[in-house]
View 1 (spheres, rainbow, N blue to C red):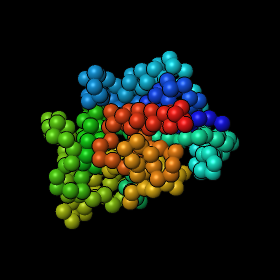
View 2 (view 1 turned 30 degrees about the vertical axis):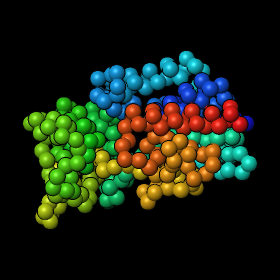
View 3 (view 1 turned 180 degrees about the vertical axis):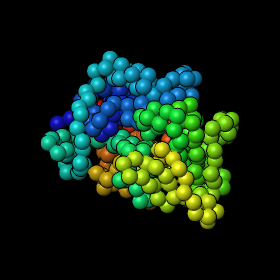
Length: 297
């Protein structure tokens, strides 16, 4: 049995692990894919204190170095369920872990548009990651769906690769921070299509076009790729603690959920601001409180 199991190896999970491991309690991080989570997908991070400009890959490398230095234990596995009896039982397809405390740091996944062609053409022109797939569209024309910070930063990134980038947003006003709006407007190959709704993504073997309506007028827009940034949904299906209407875990100031001994940290937690800095903060609080409750028991 472990003292603490942390589900998720992103910024929040690793921050929690560092605090818990330094407190000399038996701590295990379970990560289903790669360490760092979505941080590694960011091209240029500008608001992480001490690093005015750093790539996501480089920041994750430093996360890993830090975790390795203090010997944080990390296991690759996919958690399916977490239930509490006397202790917490964390189940994966092949393993069962038992812990006194558990910290949920599972992050989020992209929200889908829910239109025809989205699933069928995924990986064939439809993408949720410009950093991953953008280079495939060098010289082509692409659409970015969304009006927030993620949509605009990825559109700016794509504007250096594609010949044309359309930003399609359902409202008449963008939601992104002014600095990103300014940068996007300065790009000559970015065109804004506001008050617009996507109805269908079309193509045979690859994306060929989209059906959209602008101010109620329906039209077909020829594009080679579609990048979707309309928000995210939390990866919290495996727990039954109290959540908000969108599935984000409700916590107190110590990151404790409605279930005693179960914490949540990072993007999967109900809060207003989701940034790398706030994820690290959540993780630090959860890791410290969970470890302290064990050592002071």
